[in-house]
Image (tube, rainbow, N blue to C red; front, side, top):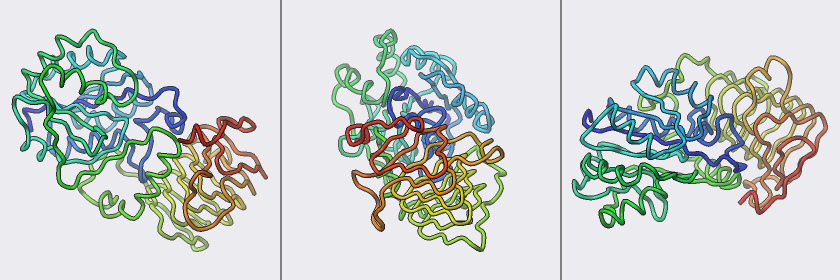
Length: 358
């Protein structure tokens, strides 16, 4: 794979509610535990032993920059902060020229075998990794890439999934893309808070087999994290628990990302708790997404205070139109009541429900 340059593009959906669930936007959004959207993209290249890997950050996020300059830098990942994606693509290729270029959007979690993509590569074609109508990556030869970028480098690609913006002009120039669906492929394309909630909850039965955290097949810069501690008072069922969590309450059918504390007497059902949150004694979270919070909250206090209730009152199946969401950095006070279908941008400010959730 030394002859392939893998480029991951973080264009972001800057104004979407989904991008505000995590500090750093969609590329930094956890999916199924500790791994974030960008980890899925970089993981594919590392497992395929691609030694030329670049990240183009169209949002110029300091959070993404810090993440890429951490352990991923030791794996040879180069970071470019550039809003003009086409210009940055040319710069990345100039710095690390390769026989083939693989372009992946880091705004959607996807797992695929890059070796399988290469084996199905059609030299004179644009090779598209897609499932149904959803597009996740595009691969093309050095010659086709150079020809395309010379004509496109001045263009401003829109935010969102860059592949959707790149493929149409490539197909106009070189003909219909050659569709490739590698064996074992998995991809998700959530564009709203509710779609994200549904995608994660629906994948809970599959995560342990595909992305088990004890597996050596997961390449991530997150290393030497303390193991999670589940106290004797806890009751945890059908739940994905990442690293550095402390659970003393009742948790079922949920995903608990890293650095989360759920105190004794708290209840979490059919929900997603993102990093840095402290769920206090007596709090109840049902059919909801709790956005990322500052890890220092674990030292300074709670993020969801005592006896707060978030989400639908129903029990059993995950919420449909009544899923609730609390965006990143929001502190939920004691005895708060947040009904299903609400998106909380700051406590006391409720945004309208179904249209924004979808």
